[in-house]
Amino acid sequence: MMINIIVENNQGERRTLEIPGDMNLSLMEVLKAYEYNVLATCGGMAMCGTCHVQVLEGIDNLPAHSNAELDMLDTLPDAESTSRLACQLQVNESMQNAVFRLCAEEEMV
Ligand code: FES
Image (cartoon, rainbow, N blue to C red; front, side, top):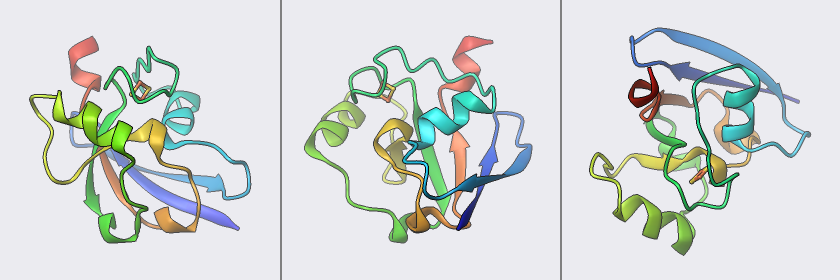
């Protein structure tokens, strides 16, 4: 099954990514594969916050935060109730047609 997710960069440009749902990838890994500027310095351990995204649509379908994710989000000054760490989200049906805005990308330009 293909999963369609929509990614908005810091210029407000949206792109639809079509990802096979059976590859066991995190959203962070997918964003890196598509060459978005996601540093992911901790390698997906919920310890760096550089994979921070805002969920603009579809947040109710996503699995709940782990404690590690919540603790990390608590340290980010720009975190909101719609914030998630892309490394903690598996790409699967829960993400179908969700819209994500990249948060950390602009700090790197
Ligand atoms: S990659 Fe470090 S918190 Fe997600």
